[in-house]
Image (cartoon, rainbow, N blue to C red; front, side):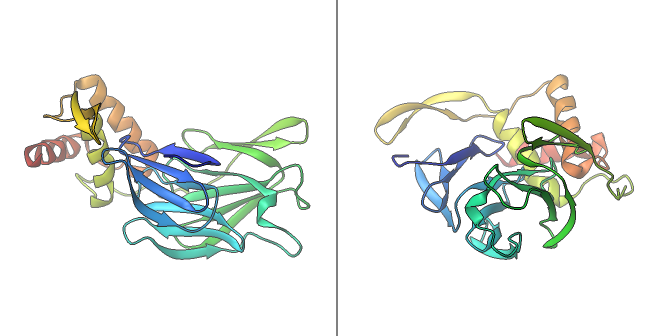
Amino acid sequence: YDAPATNACFSLDDSYILVSSDGVRLLDISTNTQWRYFGGSSALLTPDARVVVSLEPDGVGVWDVRTATRTFLLPVLQPKERFDQFTSMCLTPDGRFLAIAQGEKGIQPGVQIWDIKNGIRIGALEGRSPLSFSGDARFLLCGDGKALRLWELEWDWEFPEQTDWDDDATPLLEFFLTRSRPYEMCGLNGKRAPVRKGVPRWDQRAFESLLKELSLRGYGCLRSGGIRRKLDDFTRMI
């Protein structure tokens, strides 16, 4: 990618890069091409790579990656606020909630927390940039002048019954299988580059790591046996 960028991040399977630069672009690494374009500036990609959130002049846009359409505009700006005063955003590990805060130049210090699935604000805290959720979303770290402040969050948890599978978890298993494929040197745009190819292979440690990741992403209700069978099904389709 040959242009100035304000920030960038990988998808979980390392197949795509989300780049904020005169708009937001999702780049396919294997083909070195732009796959999707979104409005806004600084942006984040949810763990399942299905949603992009981007800072826009009139709020925060929530974009559907598959259709490249904006599903929500979160009205984070208050009167006399400018979007460039917001300097930090972060997502919970399950990708459902967004925290956004102003930097030192912001006129209204405070952290807003939004439900990006339903487009509603669910809370607000004292603090500024930078922001970071803990791995289990129990804590939120935020700036506070010349110090940092750690908030313990109280969520209205929902614990669904145990089940063998949930189709919404499909992208996370696909990402796991992609990461489990060995690299091979292949031609790419006239150059030799490592590309993941072949049959995925993983051991028990990698499988246990997948179970932990699924739990943090909101799928702790899935039985390990159901997950293993889905992995086998997906592997046979490769």
